Length: 197
Ligand SMILES: Nc1ncnc2c1ncn2[C@@H]1O[C@H](COP(=O)(O)OP(=O)(O)OP(=O)(O)O)[C@@H](O)[C@H]1O
Image (cartoon, rainbow, N blue to C red; front, side, top):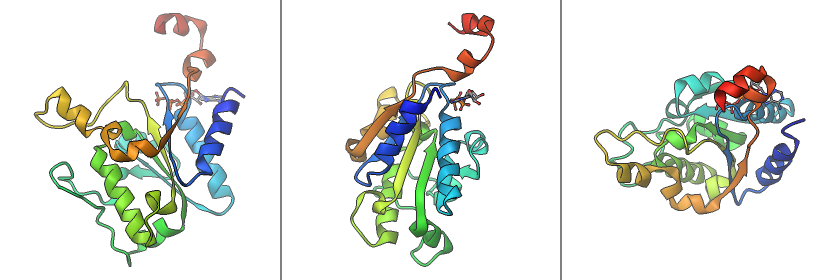
């Protein structure tokens, strides 16, 4: 299997609650395929796995996926707030879901504002009543920084870089796993491979 090594590396980092795993995957390298495999693995054991994405279209590709804004109830003016949190109270049903969740997958995370990740971190700590990274819940971020960075209206490139996840203090806790083989091209016709390269 083409993803054997990446899957092993992912399994290893996903065991460690002291790190956030980032699946670095250029287009066509099988990120959606692998993510759905992991979601199915967790759910097949009867555990809860949440799937979300920064954009609606990416969310539709994940099994049971929803947008990050809808799932986490992120404030719409998150960039303007000093220290935002998700609009999820400790006693809400969503807090219950998050408390019993084994894995959270966030696809196209590179489009998210760094404050969204920080808001999730603070909210999970609050809900879990602890000071552990992400409240002790395993988080898998997926995306490709070579594609779209956060969209900040009327911003300079510097503002965009400053808003991106890599500028967050939480990025020091991120372990990167990379996918390199383009599965879409290698599985397709050789003519298409020539066209792409
Ligand atoms: N390990 C695999 N074995 C067989 N087919 C695979 C494997 N990984 C990916 N594929 C196939 O390769 C194609 C691209 O995979 P996928 O859509 O998961 O890539 P992606 O990284 O999410 O791409 P994009 O970022 O463009 O959405 C799909 O048709 C998928 O079924």
